[in-house]
Image 1 (cartoon, helix red, strand yellow):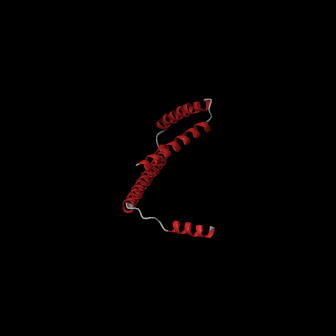
Image 2 (spheres, rainbow, N blue to C red; image 1 turned 60 degrees about the horizontal axis):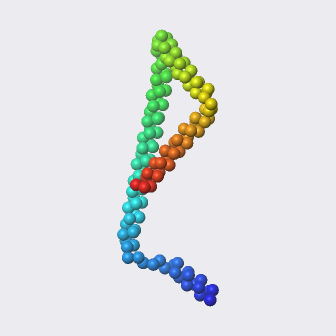
Image 3 (cartoon, rainbow, N blue to C red; image 1 turned 60 degrees about the vertical axis):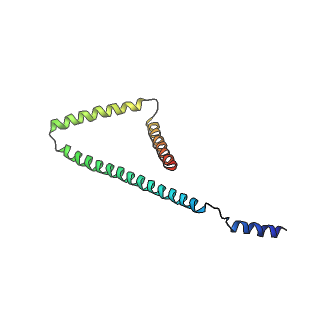
Length: 125
């Protein structure tokens, strides 16, 4: 009896039942997969654009640093004093009860939450 049951069960799993709306279901699944790929391509493009902007900014900033070295000494001392004031204000962050690692961790968690939110929005779209 056990062998007959196993054979019968195997046949049932090997033969998929035919549903009356299988073409419509397949079309819906295909459309959703195509839409998801479109969103992935858009997100990859936006990520590439953002990375390109960062690279361009780094290139310009590096070029700007070279140009600053050739500026007159008065202008350079003004820039140095501005940078010094900015560094003093950034050093005040270290006096907070939470250390710098905590701030970096909070920023990383914010980025992760944003990524989860975007993926959730893409899945529900």
